[in-house]
Image (tube, rainbow, N blue to C red; front, side, top):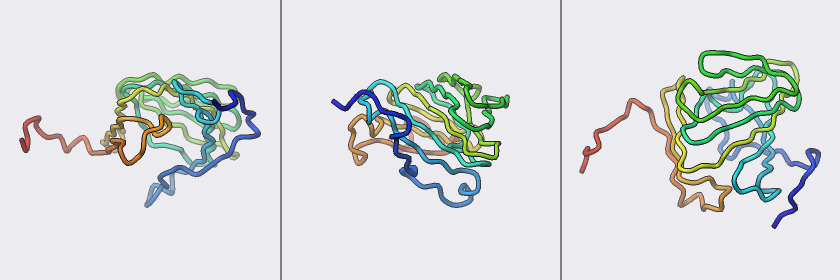
Length: 170
């Protein structure tokens, strides 16, 4: 079992596994320090997210299965939740429960310095993400941190407009 403690200064920040491409590079950029696997956590996912000024880490989205919590470590920004926008500053906690588009959320660094926050999430699977701004959804059968070989993991993103009948093609 790994040592169940690590200091913030000892974390290693890395680029995301799937790099941002195309026009999205103008809006999205972040590095991540994964904490959960380093300290042996199995029921919750933890990471420190670092976002440069003017950028976001992820698109506006909601989770159908998992709850997230964010704690701002440094910097300033804003969080969009549903139809509301709230300012963020060092020391703020934010709860993002599972639900529909009303719980969709996105953190933006609206400050002039790097924004760093602790992200904590339940790790329930399967998970469904919805992206209200782009009409997409995603599904995943297991998180890679759970020891699942990515080659056997089910992970799919589609447009909601591509709905087919249950019996289509049978």
